[in-house]
Image 1 (tube, rainbow, N blue to C red):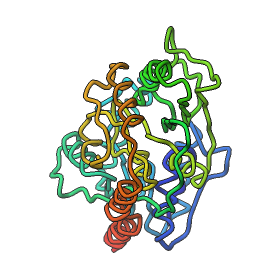
Image 2 (image 1 turned 45 degrees about the vertical axis):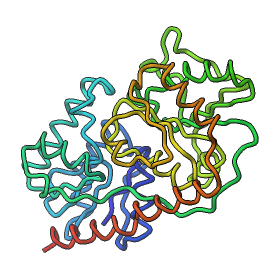
Image 3 (image 1 turned 180 degrees about the vertical axis):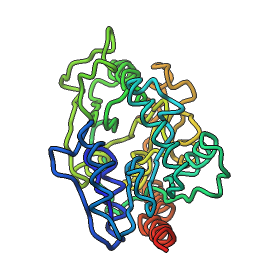
Length: 323
């Protein structure tokens, strides 16, 4: 049985589910999120899945369910706790350690996260299987006639570094008045917008939310570059999705993003420096990729990141815990 997440991480769930069998289980909507959701997960989910192995794909799972595989995507609650409320970070650290102590099978979605989990849980890295994120093969879209950038910020948490992207784009726009920036995520979080970082939507900066996968691929595929200069990531799925769409990325120079970087991408070492990010965005305008470069990058991404291969890893782990 597969435990369906609400909100974040649905892309991973949908990607592997396309290649998995089994029954999908989800709580009633009123128990989907927050304290009520965690209570349902810990108390009711084990009863609903009795006699069946369970796959939990969103960083958490019921402690009472021993025949279970839990996918923990990153160690941000350990390594970047300032991106969360103190209570949530503490709770998630305790839960992650408790899952390990209970002997519940832990899988992760990147080599980087495997090393970090091994460090925090005190176990050999080879004992943590990797079922990485994947990409969907897609037909490349024509690029916009004017320079366009997209920043896929998801939950818009502070680690996404959106304030720096906005300040960088202001500099880019002064030199390139036709340029536009689309930010995928909800504006307005008090933990992101403050002082001179507060930025209202205007003719050249747009906020969008609630896009389905096809609409997001179209948006990213038509952009000149995807700006993804996070402070912390476990993998960096928006980056490999951009590569698959034939769109180069402006990436921060953190270790997990270096592991997935394409040759055509541009790395910013000083991710908090808006001038450095602006320079990288300007480079993307001055040296756009050729059709051949885009096709090559897209092909490499599809060969490197496979939902089918990840599903095969998860199936093997589920069979093991069910024995």
